[in-house]
Image (tube, rainbow, N blue to C red; front, top):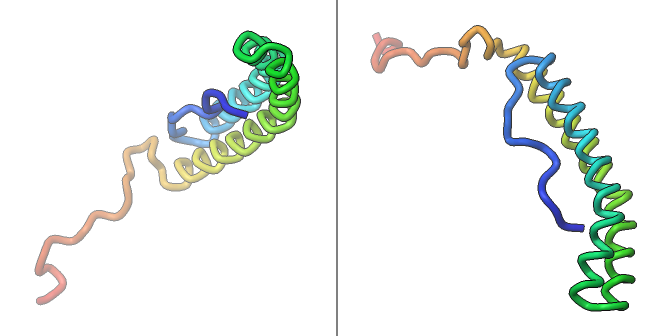
Length: 107
């Protein structure tokens, strides 16, 4: 089951943005699944005829299960990234502890 990735490369800055992106991933997974169920058999049939139609139907059926699972996993990832951003305070400009200048701890 091939196609475009469900999740975007956008990294959420906080939990609210993570949930928003997660909902988009869930919707994208369902949309891609239904779209693949219709489009995949047609594409395969134009390439390989009747055998392609059956191959496309099998790929579309597999996508009907796998694409929503991909959407769920992408949603979990976006929520976790949003929670990480919330905890680290990326929205306030905090990017981790600053490194002390060289030699500052030596004496």
